[in-house]
Image (cartoon, rainbow, N blue to C red; front, side):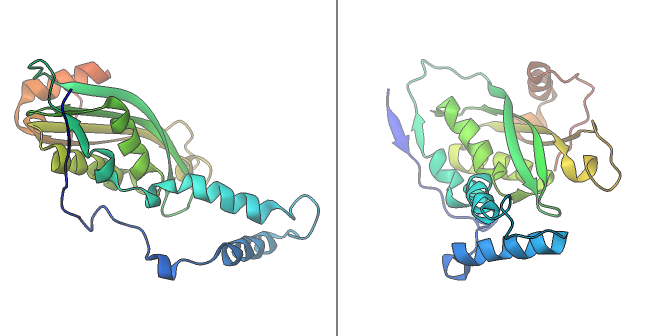
Length: 218
């Protein structure tokens, strides 16, 4: 199978990470956690909390691992020997865990990602990795949806891209209005997924949405 590495141009809309020179040290981050523990009303020096700051920072390294990843590099290796396959490619029900940039609490959901290849395809695990690269950051769902779709379009240059995210936001279920069970659905349709109703209907049918599902063309 023939493989090619693409070299797309950089885009500031995707690169959200802070310059490493401005990044606090681990010691400073752990000290900040101790301040928050005191602010909450507890004693960071007591037995049950003494190791909490280091645990929190290790957790944050996992929660926000997306800042260390280049989403375009994930899609850089593509394949052309597909025996003339020219139909839709869909990876659905990709579970993701992200974090609300307003309250820093979890957003947990599923992503459905599709594209109509022009000439080249990418390994399916790369689609899941692409979702995680954007999920493991401080996010809002609308932006994450657009980032996934736009990166697919930019790197693979397919005939079309469709992305739907469905998620529960703990900033809404564990605080504020306390509406547990409410889910948010966002979508981005590009190319044939936006312009051709039959392509859009096929995608929605595959991922389990009715043809009457309202899709934003943002």
